[in-house]
Length: 109
Image 1 (tube, rainbow, N blue to C red):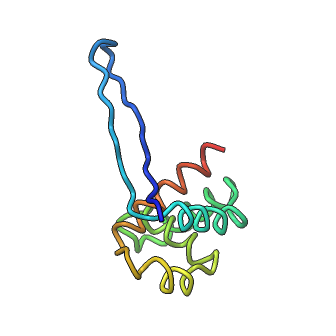
Image 2 (image 1 turned 90 degrees about the horizontal axis):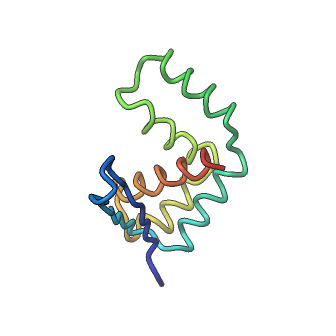
C-alpha cells in the first residue's frame, strides 16, 4: 500500500534561488481518494463560504479553517469510516494534513 506524497515547488523572486518543498502525507493513496471523493460530493464553493461565515459569526472557534475542514468531513458522514480506516494508522494531525490538501484541491477545481 503506497503513501500519498505531495510535491510543490516554491520559487522566490530570484529565479536562480528556487527552493522545492516536499510535503508527504502519511495517508494512503486509496484513503486520500476516498476522503476527497466523499467530501467532493457535498462540497461547493458557495456552501464553503457560507459555512465559513457561520463559523466566524458563531465566534466559538479559534481556528476557523481547521473547524471548516473537519466540519466537511463530518457533513460527509465520514466519522465511522475514519475511525475504522484512518485512525488505525494515523492521528488527528495526519488526518488534518490530508483534509487541508482536500480543501486545496476542491478550491482549485
